[in-house]
Length: 326
Image (cartoon, rainbow, N blue to C red; front, top):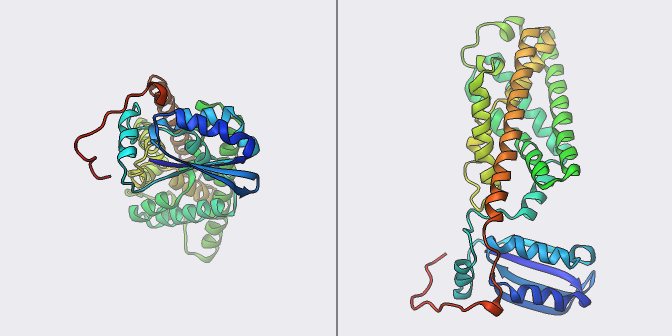
């Protein structure tokens, strides 16, 4: 269940309430006349079954709600309501499978924003990956993978392609390009400092590293894992169930590959650089393509799900037993 809040000028209120009243996906509807100060107008609130949110959002956007006011969607973690249960049951589709495209687009923009926090996490994760390579320890490699923030921007590439958002595509590509460049540069400087202090040697970078050799030796399995991880990640991001993202983060070697590139540059180990760059490209390409295909399939599937019915044509079924707890 989602809580929909619309803040609009008064001249739009009647049309907005009509849209919400007509939808079987709406279980409750409230209008607060004169409650809004900016813009001056009204506040409309409704509880909406998640699987019916897209149709409602599209109809409200057609009214121009986003131009004169604000439309907000928030998940309701716990709700107890017979009307809500009936709206959820009568709306075609499953709430866990529903993709709320407005929510996905907003999250994609937020996680692809090139800011100090994004660059800091990219740099810190790549530094840890560099240390993991020098020490040849998989524990630190996993820590670097989890810390890296790049998956959100990679997933945003798929969202941009499916939703035809060229601005989002440019924002995500810029965040990835600048983020990896800055992280590699910072780690390279740290590696040069470690080399000058005698903490890191060429042997540490190019020697036998059984625990971390996979970072610079990509193969078909690197691509397969990237594809599977991206599919799982996109499903976690778009559904109501967000479990599984930690497993995605530790399945792909983008951040470790960037760390190895930095070490290779610092010591002139060009074979390490080439192998790691290839690993990085394979992972990002596989994840972006898989994310795009997954989102395209989700959109195709949901396009075949009937829209929520109008209350004017709806005959509600009254349950003899109370709804199960939610």
